[in-house]
Length: 564
Ligand code: SF4
Image (cartoon, rainbow, N blue to C red; front, top):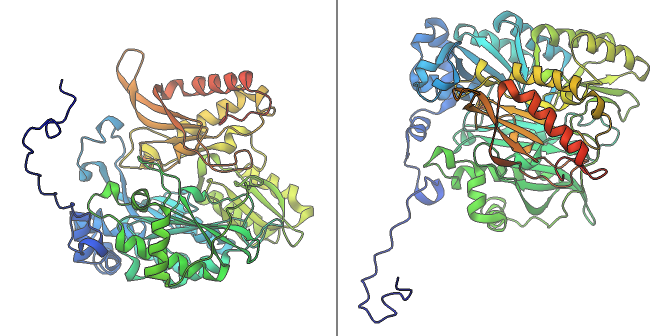
């Protein structure tokens, strides 16, 4: 083979091909706003938020069959509604069927709870909606939302009326828009808090959630703000995050992260190195969303999250555009946040600023019910508390418990199935919705993970207490990573795998060694897929037990699972 290029060897040079014009990526600020796919088309044809009027005036009266397909599988998401999976369709058929063949005439409804903050009055209304309109279902999601199932379109206006009467919304709970704003679940409360982000979360919600100017983004946009030293809002995997930090000259404020996200192409957020004063957070948040709206890629839906723009631009260019074109001023440089302190799931009993206590509990993989939520509201109020919080770890926190009533509250919550002192896997296991309701799912998750956690806690009772750090187990029903598998010590991605006889059975691809920054891990890192490492759902418990025992036997002193 000739190693010398023909031109260099004296051969006549071929005429240079004209450079191919770069393919438009649908960036509004670069390529114009002409829609490049059906999704972009329907968002422009009729803004998604407009569907609410049709629900109230037509669909709720005329029923499921009257819903326009672009509303059904598109615009309704902007009001927190997804059709749910028809029962009985196995995971092997998920990719083969058309959306209308997979969906039921019922909806999942997502109630957004910005900052995870609920009054007991609001909790009771959610509980009532669950009992009356959602067959008693309720899941606490890992984005501080409450998800209800079995909702009929006929009941949606009444549900909105009840929720909105107590200041709750489903507005932009899903869709290509600013989703729920994650906030520290102990904002304004924890004795060790650095900054209370509540005013900023409330201002963003008041000014921009439901704003038509931000309701057509390239894809979903996830936000997180925390002033707690545990850094409890999984900031590394949001589109924009603000994490409390102390600037040597400017005092307390926030460090700004952008462009994180998981799904099939996981990317940890980039620090822009910019310091944001607390009162500037809403303005900077708004500017970041506008950069995404105007420069985000819209041609391919699976390349439309902000993380892809960050991957191409890098942090420096993003900050420059943010400052020059949107803020019209430079942000000061700032230091990174220190390593997290304490546990960000807030399970257990902890001191508040005012001397009272907050009590964090672990439902099993976030699953509760209308009955349980009503029970929590009753119990809290019986002890003088009127506030609860949901966490990004599928946990629930009761605030304002008098110090001398803590044990009664802990016992009362345990009677509701909510453990303040859970065993290891009850505490660390998370699971997404899975095949029970999700149209994209390949395998079952919630029941599988609940059973696995209970069994693992029994089988590994002898080693749990001695582990230097918790081992986190996250279970997904498909590659989309709603349960954040790449950020778990053991992450399981649902797929069909070969069973003992070679037939396809529900199982998981294994990811190992991931984690977000925490007290036992200074920096976030994504779990590695171990090639070929798959486990059937039936063998899951044995597999995890084996891995944990091997780690425990082989670890060097306080070596954590992630560094082992
Ligand atoms: Fe559905 Fe997949 Fe998300 Fe689970 S990870 S909720 S199966 S889309």
